[in-house]
Length: 247
Image (cartoon, rainbow, N blue to C red; front, side, top):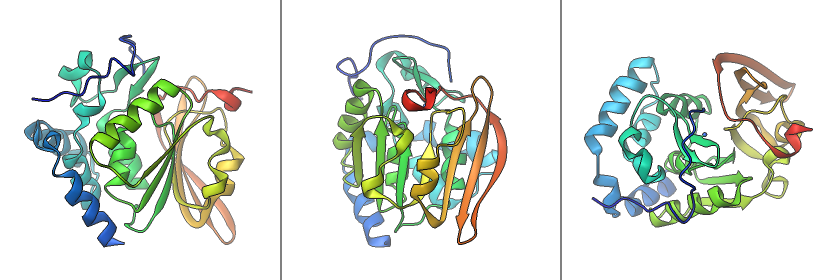
């Protein structure tokens, strides 16, 4: 079985902390050629059945993407035994890959459509970006830690995801030159909702973001012609957003 070597990108640090239809079909057809997609399929099926579907994630496209994306390809060698476990896994540099259920829940909350353009703040391992790439037309992802961003890009490129755009930098101010976005997903927690991200959300769009310092709430933001509404949907614990969000 081929396992991607992460030593070039990740330091071996162990931290117990909590990371149109034609376009979609073409992307799926291309990535299925890579042998990694056929590895550990039973583990992925079990992950989806027990950890995700049983917890009321119902969107069939999201469930299909979670079954398809090889989560283990985004995890360093030392974490392979935990790749499909029901908890976050360290990827080094004080960062984690989020619990599978949280990835699925947040993805479903975006109500992704094949024609959507989605902004992700906090590339991390690249796993969330890959899941989104299965579902939408274009993913824009920003990572503040260069080693993580470069590693995620290398893995996604190896898996032939061609609909992901990458940027190394502070995600607090988003990606204004590519805005507006149909959906925005934030995978690191600021102490407040960044206004630049709200501004870059398209009318009719959805953003999901963990907000708080020590303890956080996962908030879903909807934008329409009248303004924005937001709803707290669950208590969570994410790594903090660094950079301008700390000011």
